[in-house]
Length: 153
Image 1 (cartoon, rainbow, N blue to C red):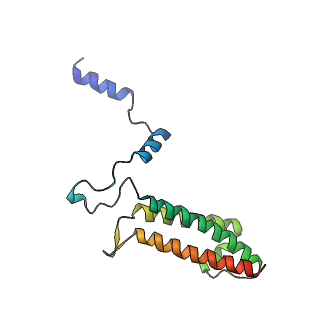
Image 2: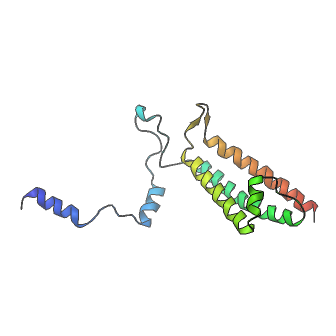
Image 3: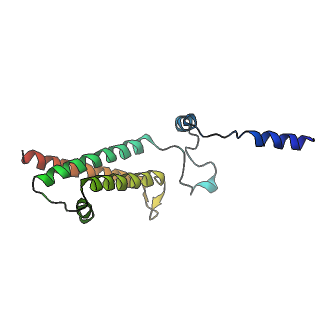
């Protein structure tokens, strides 16, 4: 048996790159790719590390989406109607379908926006700015619903 066969046999025995939760934790805590490495990679927008502000915006938007769903159902019980035609159609299938669909659509959209946060939309705006805009719109919507809930008490 020569050296190359011995090395090949060692590699075939055990896979060194096992996926564990330890891998996820250390990959999150010690992510290495904060920026591009070379000038030719300047157009690459996908990195391992995202600014904590994006985390705050994404989690805050998701929490406000949950609060919006809850307050929407409360307002519907008090006689208001759903202005969004997509959500109104989902409400026709029941409150569970409404809530699950709302959380899925919001969560998937947020994941996509965080993933492409460094990209530019129309070569002008960073896509991460859309997260700030969506967060602000949800904050206004939640305040609007909260005022209507207080008024109806």
